[in-house]
Amino acid sequence: MTDSLERGVSIALGDATDDYDIEGIAAALRDQGAQTVNDLSAEDFWALVSEHEVRDEIEAVAPLDRFRAEVEAVLKTPVEAPAVWQRGGVTLEITGHSRAGGMTLPPQPLAAFRLTVLGSEPVEWGPWSAEVFSWPRLWEEVEKRISAWTAEAEERREAYRRDLHEADAASLRARRAASAAEAAHRALAAITPADETTGEDAQHMADRPTVSADDVAEYLGIDPASVRKQMSRWEIDGVVAYESGGQPRTRYPRAEVQAKAARRPGRGARTDLR
Image 1 (cartoon, rainbow, N blue to C red):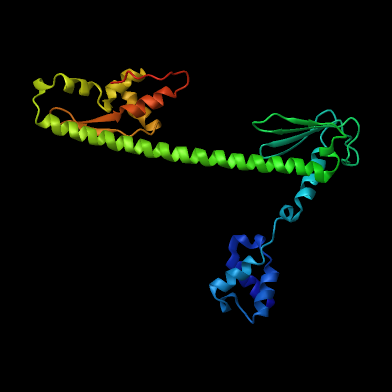
Image 2: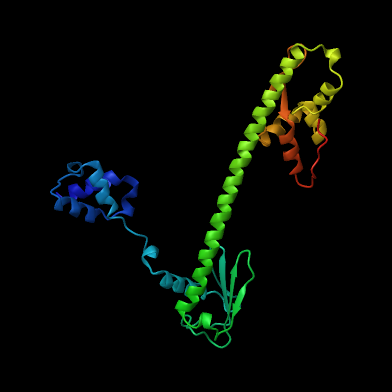
């Protein structure tokens, strides 16, 4: 019965069997009088399974012990090269310390420590500095910098996500506004004789929010046949407009084309696209 129950647990877990203590789960089921995994409700079964997750060995090690083991491991590098330990944006370099017998603290007279956090000036300590006088003190200095770096990185990552979302939203609003402007212009053109388009309306035509593929080709200095491919690469959607004669023609948001063109390598911002 034991083998059958453990086999049933393994089948239920599928590819995740290595992440859980199968024998422990089966024993817990037997303690509850179950002969198969179906004798418990799904909710109770998976709650029991979660209690028997096999933790990664490195997670079970105390942070200080893990740090010490990792540093002593990198000390096995060739003597002529610094021992370099890194986690996230924090790097600890150790020079002048004997590779034989692991690292002792306080360190040897020739040892030097250099702690660098990305975006900040490095900090250097000699062998008798208080910060490296013991493993707990060294880890304390390293850990607080890891925490500060992690918090700042997450803050900047969130700001990037927020700005990217706003940029996407602004791009969508621009496309919708351009489409609405084109619709309004078509409605105006439907009741306005072509020879009366003078003065203010002529200026409006010059500053229309969308431009033709020919305008884009001239602005970018590319073949008109390549415009559609370039706009697709830049993820700029065209707006279908009906020119005189009722023929559909794709036009592109002028502001988006200018913005993308300005970010091309070696290109400065231009504002002369009409």
